[in-house]
Length: 428
Image (cartoon, rainbow, N blue to C red; front, side, top):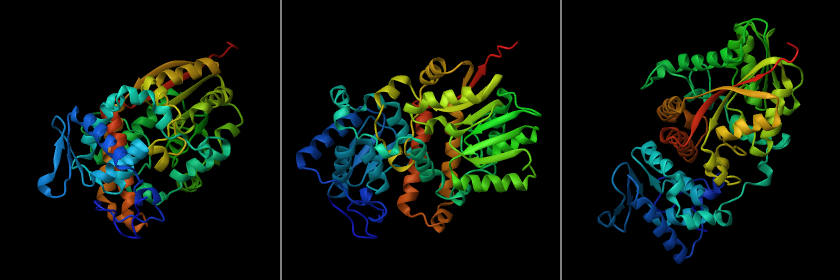
């Protein structure tokens, strides 16, 4: 393995990587020349057919080689390391190569959007059929058992409340907003988040006296908004940092008599509620536990009640093709995460609950705009992120995560849905 000394950038990289903190970024996998050459040929073949320009550095500036049909530029500064990482670890290696500074793009989102739009055919069909042989498998320790879920959630959401506050708006909402039109601007984001929250509360029929269960507190904005309507809210989270700040916000709003924020797994929830709201939490459940999650919604909901569920989704065939895969997002951002398809949600509800999917709306373009605003804010405040102790490798990782996600929604590979689930009142 080719490694970098502490504080020294790998060859061809513009980033000084701390090998103690980022061992798989600091060290380039050792690969034989034939394997690297084959990977390079496969990568160039894939890029050659795409509407982008991939420029591979040569021994001198005049030796650079460009492939592609024209469009956004992807600039590979260290082709040897780039190919070695992809050859060894696929898309995980692609992300790690960006973290190491071995490639970059003047318009990162545009380049990633092209790649996201062609995800299904980037790898030749014969190699796709061999995916189980070469794709990394998810670590057993990241299964979303009760203990595993606590660890997985903590790794992302307990990073630092101050970090999230630097790029989120004043509502501290970390899910898709709902805008009135595009392009969106930062000064409209808080209102767009309230519009999203209000729509979910309306879907669930939340008003004065409603007993509301929220699964996934975030930093408490939905609970506060529901309590302001007169609801009595029990909100569940596994993040200690989020719970601490959410409780502070509840106290500051004078709503402690209406909102209870509990450090509790959804499987441990008790009681009966008139409404349940869960915003972009199902993605953290894991597909093996989707039946348990949806049964929990059913069991906690009173007859005649309503569930408002917001979920990121992906095409069903891609969900099946990537089942069990260990991705860059899993490794560095959302351990244990799994994005469902609309069909997977509908089948889980049908097969494991007494609930009915009574409505569904998609608005993925709004998530792309939300992510753009977060990414631009994060970039603008990079100095403040650094002051919190997050190094350049982390900042490149987070930039890649936000851009990668935005590209997913801009390409249509990802979408976001609001589902209304209802439960018949058999007593009527």
